[in-house]
Image (cartoon, rainbow, N blue to C red; front, side, top):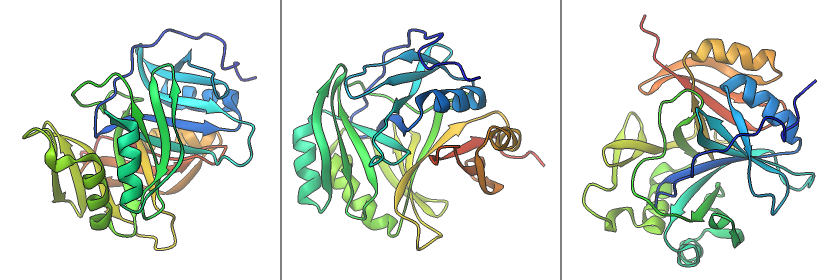
Length: 267
């Protein structure tokens, strides 16, 4: 029997909105209790009640720090998927820049307890979110087990996508050293204050829909992939090494795609 999403809830740390960088990831799930049971077991998450303005919502916690959100929805029109939210100082101005550069804004900006959010798509069709909230400089991603460690756009044209996001978020027009976009390890990498925060890569599958993919940090990618499979997930391919660590793609029991990232195999 799975524990209800409302049971054992804890109070989480305040989430930080970092302008022009990935600041939050959230899963839309059809079965909230099923999602919390799966990810809680796999990534060691506990949960705190979040704002329920648009349906039941919880924040995932690691060591008292909020690392992700999960919303439950019975609306069959909403796919089960992880969404990456970028921070912004002005949601309305950002929405206009997205539209002016060939993207679309599907929902919002809408107000909620922590600011204003919206859901958009870039001009390749990859969905993403943006959030105007308590803006603070810094880097959100970290290697703490269970936390988002890497965000990567898999798309048909990484260079065109880099131009789109660079113009929308003004990466080149901010303080020196705040953002740096470079080509490394066959992908476009966005660095903030010297830390890698996102990458844009040409998809190896030409038929795959462009999408932002979330990598969660784990101590052992192989063991975690095996655990995920026992919990009902689909392991999509082999666990592989990369310059950023050992990783694997998965599909959770409700169909949401995500990845795990662990240390490289010392052998």
